[in-house]
Amino acid sequence: MPASPPASDKYTQSQPLWARIALALRGRVLAGEWKAGEAIPAESALSEFYGVALGTMRGAIQSLVEDGLLERIHGRGTFVRGGLTGATMLRFFRFGSAEGDVPASRIKSVKAVKAPALAARELLLAADEQAICIERQRCWGGKVQLLETLWVPHDPFKALLDLDKKDFSPLMYPMYAERLGITVNRAVDELSFDRLSAAQARTLDLPVGHPALRVERVAFDLAGRRIEFRVTVGNADHFRYRAEIR
Amino acid sequence: MPASPPASDKYTQSQPLWARIALALRGRVLAGEWKAGEAIPAESALSEFYGVALGTMRGAIQSLVEDGLLERIHGRGTFVRGGLTGATMLRFFRFGSAEGDVPASRIKSVKAVKAPALAARELLLAADEQAICIERQRCWGGKVQLLETLWVPHDPFKALLDLDKKDFSPLMYPMYAERLGITVNRAVDELSFDRLSAAQARTLDLPVGHPALRVERVAFDLAGRRIEFRVTVGNADHFRYRAEIR
DNA sequence: AAGTGGTCTAGACCACCGA
DNA sequence: CGGTGGTCTAGACCACTTA
Image 1: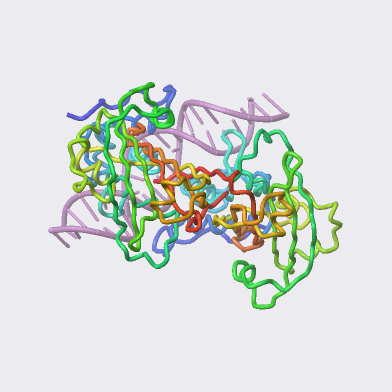
Image 2 (image 1 turned 90 degrees about the horizontal axis):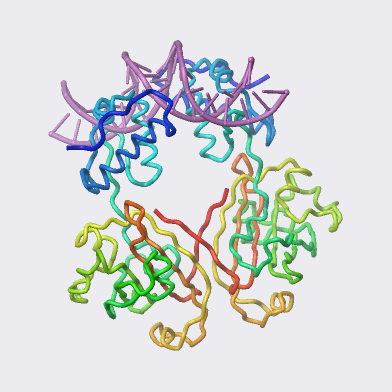
């Protein structure tokens, strides 16, 4: 049975009607009533269910579309958006003619650890809370190009500890979705500049102290929870990024 | 006298009615009927003028708001957006406790030149077309922090050649607006990584070959014309940028 | 042809702003 | 207070997709 019954008075509420309906709709998506990729009921059906005009229902849906939760396709329906693919790190780098190459991923270690200060802060974990740390390398053109260290909360991710390194998918986010039912919906990247440590330089086959781009990423699930913190390091000479400002 | 008379048939046009009205409205803004910062007529007045329902008029205006051309303020009106301030380069850098400091600008040269290949390509100028090249330094905390080279088309910018270096404003975009009536509405930045040349290093008081962030920017006016190409170079150690992905 | 989202209408009232 | 944008209604028809 779906959530909340129709709304009450026409006005006099602190929130607009469309916003309250959007909230209810979001709740039903998060509760799993409609899964990623599935269609939600038609606007007309929903407007009848909530007892509002079609335009109001459209407003509610529109707000969730702008939020990235839903996606409308003319003539087909309104769908719950699938998550990010995780191949998004490539957008910061330019590797010579490696477009066709499948980005390979090599898992180096998967360990249960106490979250270090930086990761704990970004994931909003209590001090000394348990987390899982994953180290991996990403390769293009037969060379190791990116070094990644990921932290995820121990709580919903502990199944990863029992997984063989070979069984990890080259893309983490689709794997989170399939194996854990966790959808990554949004991420925030913080870019800065760094130099390679001795160990990093050795793995990347570059000189110690070589310029490096450092990307710190926090990933969020559909409900807005912080579910992954990731630090990626790559050769700064391959950095390129396009930003639009208004 | 304003532009285009009311629209015709209800449907059967290739473009939605709101899109055609948005186009007409945009034309009136570009023609200078309403200047930056001024309010356009009320929705009700416009809907009557164009002979459409209020909701349709709102849709037309909304599309221009999303485009960055207009700005609505509840209870006050709908306004033509002012341009970018030009202080936007700071968002890529972090300078220690220089928040309060006024970013100073030092013009080194203003010259009429033949646009070099890169600038000509970005500004869509013909080969060997005349342009104006401006070199300047930007300082925070008493130190030169950024080196900038700008190219603008000779055509609407020639007045800058007669201007004394001291009379240049520290922010270019407001100056374009005041002195030339050109509003910068949008810009695209392309970030990459570089090393300082000998001359650059001397000016920035850093070692030759020191890591540098390079920003190539194309700026667009209200009509979408490319009106400035700019290359900015700064110390990569001060680079930081936040990107959100969905 | 049936079902979906997209456009459009003609009204009404609400919430905010400034004089 | 009068004017602005914001919300909401109850319809109608258009345009796209699928079967």
